[in-house]
Length: 121
Image (cartoon, rainbow, N blue to C red):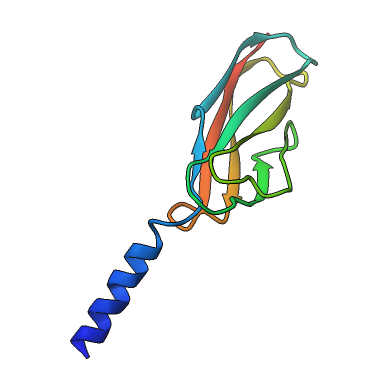
């Protein structure tokens, strides 16, 4: 029984070496100072550093002012794609710090979060 468990754990660990892996170019988008009632857009690069196709299941902003667009086709091993994020500052002045959550088929880290920061003036 111990041998079976050891083989199972070893196989599980070994199989995770051959998987899709989501890597972000950066952990944060810094918009700096922006005007009130303005829309700003930026892109963040997502790379599949694994050896199986990476699928972005969802990319969701923390509020309605942060709207991401992402590729719905699988990202091939070694390839990259962009997530475009549009932020609408609205009419409230001050610092903002929003999050965008990526859910993927990366077995080691199926959820990654990056931040959108700046100041509306």
